[in-house]
Image 1 (cartoon, rainbow, N blue to C red):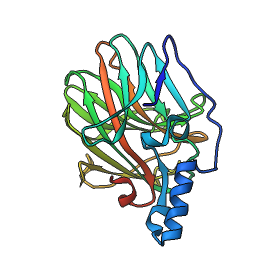
Image 2: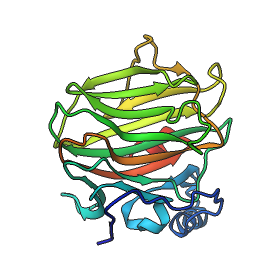
Image 3: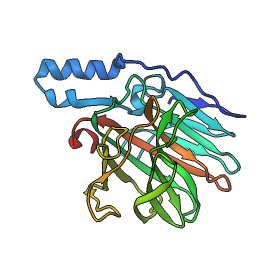
Image 4: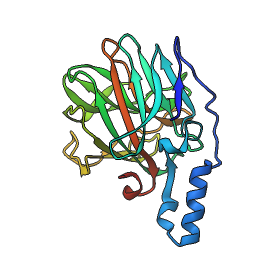
Length: 254
């Protein structure tokens, strides 16, 4: 079991641009090439807990007494466990180590979550597509998945930091939930877009379409974050597994 335990404040490690692939992903690509299975070559980032914290996270961000550990789920899959105790503000993993989306990229971000928390609890984020550096950002976090009033919501923030909710559904806790976001990475809101799958089903968004054109890139770059941000009044436990970033839906829909 890999464990990362931090308390009493916010720990941020360096988030410099890194281009070399992690060892686990490099080995997977070499194996795929040797075997003729080129499909795996479109996986850009593999965030499995079995790859180790040092190969997945750029930083662990904790405000309070939260912990980031790994546990085996009921299928024996090693899974990230983000524990944010009552009275703590944040327990998040800042990814994706050795990967950075570029303006013009078209990517799919996928993961599977199980959440234990009061269904009425408001959280600020269970997932963030976060802008860096924060200073000078317009959107701060172009995309977030959060909870509010018993619902699970996908939020978008424009360049005035005005939030809209392109999608929501009733929050289900204590069960595995699957997410995939297709994204055209762009600072131009007429070029960038998102599409969204929930539990394997492509969703119709609030604009009546399955695609929302919007600004998806802010300041220098954006990174994904998973865990729990907000919901200070209650304990939240968020299990996350099968994190992928790829160039096809099949890459991300684990």
